[in-house]
Image (tube, rainbow over all chains, first blue to last red; front, top):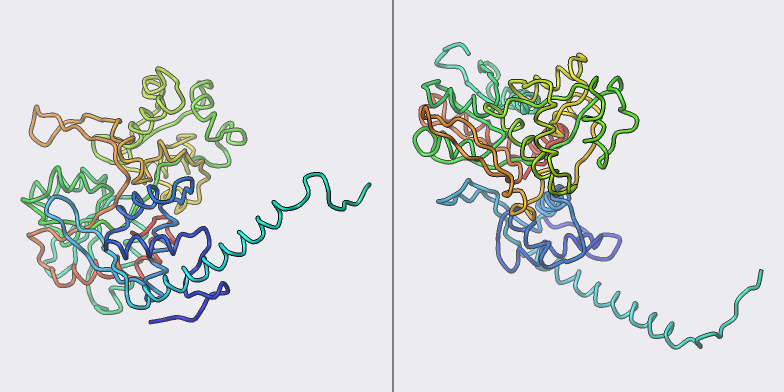
Length: 127
Length: 273
């Protein structure tokens, strides 16, 4: 179930980097939400995404066909929903990376131009 | 619970009352004439009933650890984690000082006014009760308030058999504040304050921090104690080995954990996972 593009030009939302981060973590290792939340914190220091937000994004990604889930029983613990990335998910992640690289270049260009402004110069409107 | 061998018997934590009922309505689309017998209690009380011979087809509890402590492997092979939640402090528009309580001063509001009645559910029978004690222990450390746990224990007004009973007591004005699951507070249209993640038992990233809290209760063997460590809240469901309706029970669990069940859980304030 592939979907169309978002307003940002990719199939997934780039808002707060939650969906690309989840897809990347699942691409590295299919796993369940509990572990994804723990890994999310380690990879994305400084960003506090609540567990509910992460679980909701996982379900959204599954509805959009970017991940698939199934119950995985473990010998020592309970069965949990385990997520794996789909072909559409890999494609959407790749598109997101291209978009982010473009955004990164735009930000770098902006910062370069800003940093080259004269220290006390420029034209301002006096009140 | 009656004893009709053809009915589907579901035993569940009180906090799951509303979502379980809504999922049964979906099950009836496939089995319109199916009789369903619903029973609920605190999760440890539910598990003890099954361990003592009660026959049910589905058991849904508020804590995976209860399955592990009492039911696995003798009565249940394994269970499925299907939802999470967090602890909150619930109250209503008639609760004294409800207009000034917040996540920083809640303990001062509860402890400084002897007229205020606050309560928890029974920690021996209900995970919401022992999770409240854990929250108080974690709060003592988090807010750096030595003696807070003991003061809150000493000041508590009552123990209710399950979290739903506590919510009812709040609605009827028998208590002013109750330590509840956020889902129950939402289902009952109660006001609530959120606690910081460090003490509300919601976040797997803080599992090690939560595990510093510990509650000791009577075990299932007389004279033996069971130690329960703090952990992120997780609701779990299973089909007991002695179920007479395994096929329909599986259908029910597929609904609960499927997309329609997820919508129901979300609407009832739980987080499907």
